[in-house]
Length: 499
Image 1: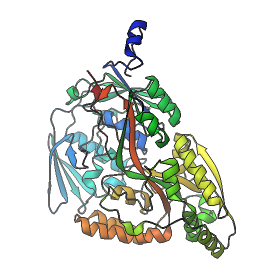
Image 2 (image 1 turned 180 degrees about the vertical axis):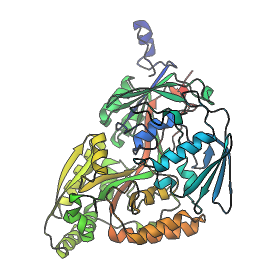
Image 3 (image 1 turned 180 degrees about the horizontal axis):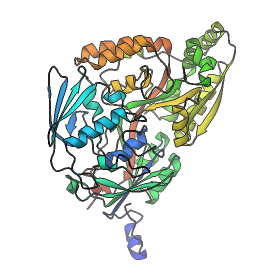
Image 4 (image 1 turned 45 degrees about the vertical axis):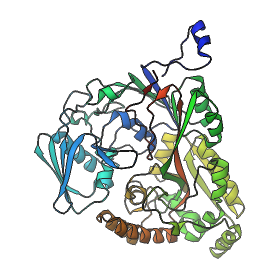
């Protein structure tokens, strides 16, 4: 981390500010990531850790344009069904082996065939991958896939050394990023050290980077202000004024692509039989009890823009037609009566951090006014992920970090059989529309398809959206070169101590 000088006289001279050393950077995350394998990982905080550890074929810039990373050049042919990627020739995995075309072929094959892979849906359009040169690979798609390049900016495009595919345990897999894995202590820290042979090593200015999961927002901020942390993600909106009034800390906010809400267990295990999961009228009633303006004002301090759909205003797929009206408790009671219920009980599963605790306590109180008896089940983050994937929930926290292509906010979570569809909702018509949107490159045509799919989702209500997530950060004023991105992933290139 950016070290405080410990000598008494020097410390007095600093007047409480934090002096810096180029050696260490410490970043606090809201949750502890799941498995450190880009093909199997499935959490937003995992994307944070993969960022510096696992280079992808492509990345994005601050305007959400796709830019090369491990790829040097690329071209489409055959009616946008063949993508030829020419790799940069100076990229190495952390084990010293080259990131060549054979490695790319092996990675895509693993991501598509590994039984526990969470990348299958993102790569489902691939029919073949062919090595056409030492550093050139041709990927053939079944049909044009408008989201394909965007998927390769994230974990589907991250490269792992094939020599480590069979290695088990944390850190067994070896990537090709500017930092390499050192150690992980569950729920305590993940440590990386700089990879000296990285092709862009000169643009990374810290010898080690440590990620620490700290679920409590108050504790995260206190540790930042004390100098024990250098960067914190998702500081509490209620702490914005405190941060902005502290000359030793900088606050950053950028419009995000993600959302928070709840999704329903529509067909995964015994808990899908709960009345809330069996009758759309009850889900509609619950929706009507939520005052999103209150969530924005009380929790977000004006930064949690009300959400009613999977696309934020930052996305071209956003359509104001699907934004809802005001809270209507009376109408909620009428819908419950129509469904034959005076009261309805269910449980909400969510990750045990202060932000989600505050959200669902408010949801619980609001819904109670219409007759919903909600039990809250806060769960340690890794266990929460496991419970969701096992279908062991009635209603669950539903959050997405947001993808640059709308497909990643919609298809992934609501299409039949998709990896992120943990509630097993399935509407064939909606899935067909989402599949069509994948093979159309014209934005207006794609938007029309998403609009049709949204109308179906608004009837079925497999998920409710509460607010869009701003991407917020706080960091030491002794850092420079910090650049926030709308996808919320921290990029360390160019970040360094002030001289």
